[in-house]
Each structure stands twice: as C-alpha cells, then as structure tokens.
Length: 223
Image (cartoon, rainbow, N blue to C red):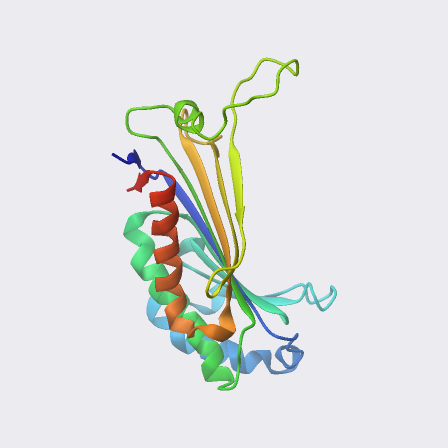
C-alpha cells in the first residue's frame, strides 16, 4: 500500500531554452509583450503586472517579468530562455496555472510563428506530512548505511539521477526531510526534455505522467 503524502506546499519551475539566443527580443520586445497581454488579460493581467528588468545590466540580466495571481505565477522572458515559476501553489490553483502557462507559451508562437525551443526543464518540489509515519522512518528504506564516527545522526536523505529515455534527456529525484513541515517529507523531481521531439501543448501531460511514474517508484500516493 503506497504511503500517502498530503501536500502542504508546492513549487514548480519550467524553463524553455531557445536553440540560440534571440537578440531580436531586445529590439522587438514590445511586440511580444502585446501578445502576452492579449493572451493573459483574461486571467486578470494588468499593466502593473508587466515590468522590464535588468535594463542597465548585461544581456543575460535583461528580461521581461510578468506576474499573475498575486505573484503565484511569474514568467521571465530572457534572450536565451523563458522561465515560468509557480510559487507556493495548491491543488485548487493547478488548473488555472496550467491554462495560463500554456496560453503564455502560445504568445511566443503568436509573436513568431517559426519560434522553436531546444529543451524544456521542469522541476516540481513538494512538502507535506506522511500518513502514519514520520519522514525519517520513510527515508530509512533508502539510507541504510549512515557514516559513523562523524557525529550523532539526526536525519538522512537520498538523491537519484537518471539518464536519457525516449524524449527525456535527464532526470533527478531527491527525497529528504522537510525543513518547512514538521516531521514531513520533501520531494523534488527535476526532468529535462527534448523540445524538438514534442509539441508545446504536450509538455504538461508528459511531465504529469512522469511525476506519477516517480510517485509510484517511491511508493508514494500524492494528494
């Protein structure tokens, strides 16, 4: 029977990398912003939610920042990648965050029909209590040989790294004791995907399927 993880806090990060830096964004950024506004205005986007940042810094520092849902969703458009973050979100917000993120990414196709991405990186981090056990008990199945003569052990975690498979280029899974939830578990799944082998609107379903695969392999039921 899988151990239930009741999610108390979640963060997600998405990074979509261009094949090459798009220096045209520095020149045509206003056109892209217009498409982003058109796509995201139905979600409550206002002009106050759009900012140009890093203007006096290097090309790598310059970006357009868009925020939605009181900052729960943030999008940074850089000349070499797009960064999306869902911060401290809960299950009730997931569907609108998914919808807004997909519409935001579609704005790039509106801006330039020939736009392409080289890779997608998705990282999901969860904190929460386990049903019927403490995180330390759950983690004991992964860590059985704790170093001795170092100090009194107070906890342990585990990290696993995986190579390419199908369209997935790399992934990593970390399980540890949460520093936010007392006696709770922290799980982080990072995966990188070949964007040239998948449609933009397929990423969400592919990433979700992989998360479910990871939960099953960890003998977790995430709720």
